[in-house]
Structures are given as C-alpha cells and as structure tokens.
Length: 337
Image 1 (cartoon, rainbow, N blue to C red):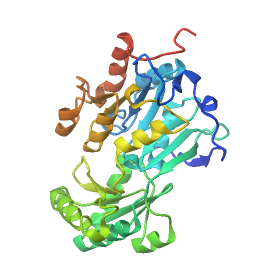
Image 2: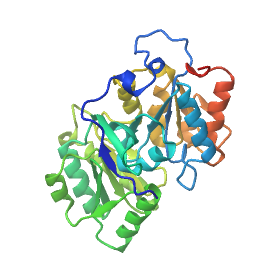
Image 3: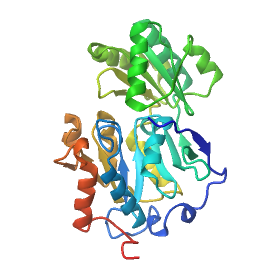
Image 4: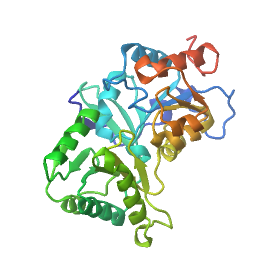
C-alpha cells in the first residue's frame, strides 16, 4: 500500500473554471442534451479489483475520458485517508471530487505537485455523527464486547481490548490500507477531537444480525434521535462490521451534495454511478443511471437501472463506460480538440 499522506490545497477554493474544463460545469438548471457528463465510482467491489487496486487498462481509459472533458468522481464508504492511494493511481491533472465516509464528507483531492507521493485536499462539506449518538455508539460497543473505530479528519482510532479485536484492526487495515491508532479509552478521543464523520463497530460474522438489531433499537430511542430521525446504520458487506452515521448521511445524499457544490455543479440526471454494496442503494437511485456490478448484492440488483455482465475483477467499470461511449451516451466536449 502507498504511504500517501495529505497536504492542503490553497485555502481559497479556485473558481470552477480553474478546476475543471468549462463544459463540465453546466449548472443545476441548465439545459443539456441528456448525455451523461460525470461518472461517480464506488471503490471496493467496483473500481478496485480483489487486490484492492485499479487495473492499468482502467486507469488509462479514465485518463482518456478526463482529457476529453468527462467528469470523474469517487464515492466511497471509506475514510478520506484510505482513498489517497486511488487518487495517486488515477493521477489526473486537477482535483477529483471525492465523496467519502459513506457521504459524510465531500473533498477535492489531487496529487501534490511539489510532493508527488502526497495528496492535496480542499474540504467542501462534512456532516458528522451527533455527539449523543457518538457517545452511545462507543458505550454500546463496549457493552456488547465489540470493537469500535472512530474517524475524524485523516485519523482513525480503534479501542481493541483483546487478541481478537487486534485481528479485526489488522483485517481492516489490510482491506483499506488505513493507518489506525489503537487507544485505551475511546471516550477520551471523543472529548479531545472533533466529532466523527463516521464510526465503525467490528465483530465476528455470526454477530452481525444481533449487532444490527441492537444498534437499531438503542439508537432509535428518543434521546438519540436527531430531529425525529434515527442515526443511519449501514450493514457492512463483508459481514463483520456496521457503520454509524448522521441520520441525513448516505452515499446518495453525499452525491447530491457534491453535485450541488460550485466546484462540480452538474444535474444528478447527467451522472452515471457504479456500485455493488448495500451502502450504494440510495447512491444508484439518485444518479441518472445507476449501474450495479455483476458481483453486486441482491438488494442492488433489485434497484439498479442496469446490472452489468462483468465483475470488478473483469474491468466492469471500464467496459461499461466504453460501451456507453461507443453508443454516444457520454458527453465528451473535448473529444475532437
């Protein structure tokens, strides 16, 4: 895994024309020719193969689309710091919009020109877990004998208390390439840091149903509701974790927030979204074209506009985009330049 770290882009966010080619910025109320002009890409199980990397053929094709004026966006459940390796691999010449932490954060990312091994960022939005929910998530995980993880800025904290917990910390590191700091008291982390963009609870696979039920019931109690809504609880596809988020956070809402920013400013109906997991449900529904991978979960097959014939190990994203391009469905304003 890469040792990529974050640096800051200039504090003043450049104008849209300073970041993207002008044809990408059509505005939310602008009339379009109804062709797709942006792609939003989930990472694990979608853009990334089973080795947690992007194939060279896919990188080359994404770079080609970008050069022709087609927009590229990443939308993932991962924390921001675990997205940097993909940003460096794509190596686009301008900031890439990134929706991360399952929609809780929106950031512009690009390789740092002065230090190519680092990623520079501009924050656009963040919707953190409310404090009462964050506290109860930590305490309930402890009561149930589960491990919890806390995500704030570029930092990830975990509170392992036994050998099994440490194995789950290592398993998550292997999955995402994260650098996780182990601590004794997660409540002290909450008190000393900003509120988390998301929290994870990790446990044996056979405990997932029990954990989901317990967290749904507990966080559904009146004292933990936010404007009458329960925290968003996402079932991890791999079976050994769940995520806790602000009630208004999901990847679909994150996509909508990103598309409304001045730096992206495109209608949702002009976005193609690719995904495979439960957390992609609203994400694919929100996009103009929601594409499920061949390896996607059954719930995604039910709502996707299209389920493709290729998996993430068969370059499904590239093959599908190539097909859309060949059929004239992608808006490529600089294709003949």
